[in-house]
Image (cartoon, rainbow, N blue to C red; front, side, top):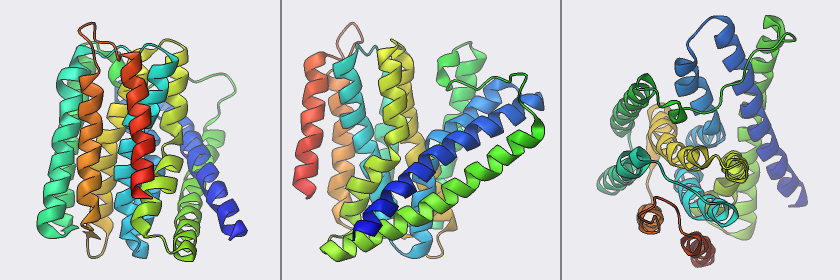
Length: 313
């Protein structure tokens, strides 16, 4: 048991560091090839923050532990809003951009409802459902592209810049090592989490909603808290809302496309999905007329997350 707990931690470290190394290497190679920063930001860097969730969910789909696959996504989205924005809002003053509040946040609610409907009606997330999610995803990418064309560069994440020490062969090695770490990390994480779940008689769904979802959300936590401390409010909030969109559309959509028989959608996920929608509505409720997240609102969101964890356990 102790060994598997250690392996779970090692898996998380490999996932997070692997994704970071991959993004840095791939972004710099793309810059060397004169690919526009907008394209790099909307693809490589944006995918990077969702790489841990993607690796775990896709691996879980192949290994038949669907509860971890879907639980990881829904659990991460709940943690992103209630836990991470709650912590960030308590530390600093979070200001929400108008387009984030009026368009991107409601879009999270829309696609969360779509996920619930297809999961409830079909009993699983099929390849056709995966295609539907990918259509939404491509539409979102086009929306981000339009934002950047209008000069709104906060729609993308910070992009690593080249320096005199960067060499193509070094960057290629970074990319390969990053991919290896993500792949191995996802295998270790899923296997150890599944073992722990069986030992304690806990369902895969619960493990996915708690330990795995929080672990794969660590990059978002670090990014948002750091951005909040530096006063970069738009990055702190945009990082979370964007991550939730990527998790549902890109991660779950891709997992559904590659899963041999789709991803079974347990009835318990209906309640979890509704809570994830409620979390976003709660966030929107606590945005004042000055477009700032109220401090007491951030505290209530944090308490709500603790209550949710107690509820599912």
